[in-house]
Image (cartoon, rainbow, N blue to C red; front, side):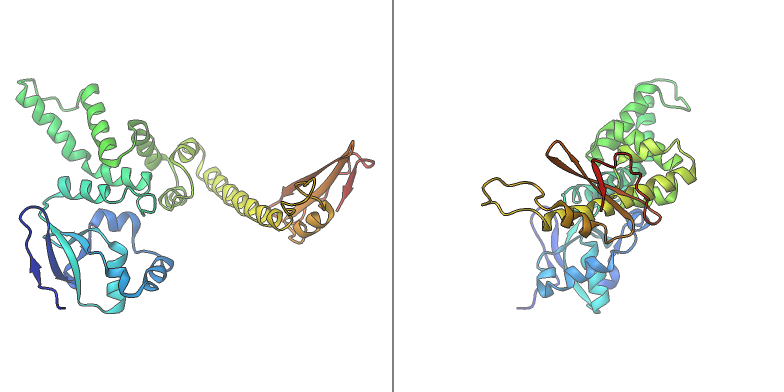
Length: 295
């Protein structure tokens, strides 16, 4: 069945078929996140026509509120029309909060950091409202907002982003004091706002090194976790030991040059000690030769 080009509803959005060339992301959204990754496009493409089962959410001006990845896929596939729900919104004061509200889910591309960055675009409008309130109250128009008014603006930004006022303050400091590599890691969800805020006082070189060490640590942890899973004993063993064959486990881990493994045996207890180096193998220090054995 061919859908009509426009289907009006009594109240709220209209169900319409829009030309793909007329649709575009909001400029702040595009600047923040850019194009979707090839992996996301591939995952969506595998769904076939089911990927377009739900309409895109757009404004009358063609700004996409929700469905950015589907729009990119439609362009890639050469589609000419997409089914959309069209909202009568005008200006950033209405458009940006709606975009953020539709991206608060766990699987959304807008994590808390990204939502705050977008919500901060509303600060000039919120400040102007605060000054308008000064005029309405018959007060002298101040060049700078009072402390209470600044806090009110921050609370409004936090409300739109769905976060705490403290995180809004942290993100503003992060944007001023962190290197681009840390900002990109925040956008991708690799690190938390709290961690990045702690790095802002470091030098640019120290921030980059801290990020590299964090990434390496995650990679090493993933490797160790995978190997440990392979050596986990069966649940029906009479007295299951977490790691019944430490020698085999240690040898498996030590196949990588950047991992050093030792097995410690003390008072009938066996403990495996794993350490990782970023540059080649580390020579083990044989501090207790009678209790420690290099694998």
